[in-house]
Image 1 (cartoon, rainbow, N blue to C red):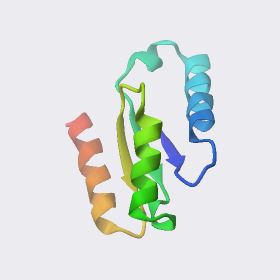
Image 2: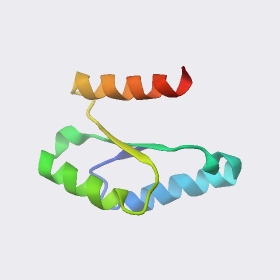
Image 3: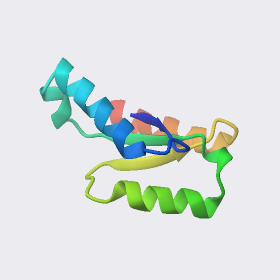
Image 4: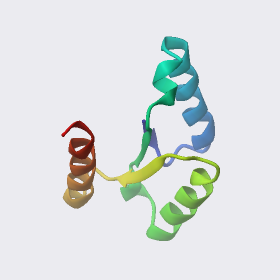
Length: 86
């Protein structure tokens, strides 16, 4: 899932995505999940860490951060996705 980290209610957005996926297929909800919080360039490092810490509570998902302005974060996302399909 790709979610805007500047969204004031990330949890609501995440639950909405899960609900829509569940409506499509209950089986898809059983798959391993990667959540990418993007637009990190709009926040400072401390804000990002706090948001990730709070958002990750109670989730058995991998949570990554992304800024399209940061080539290193793009490379990390690409590598992670490739590891799942290789």
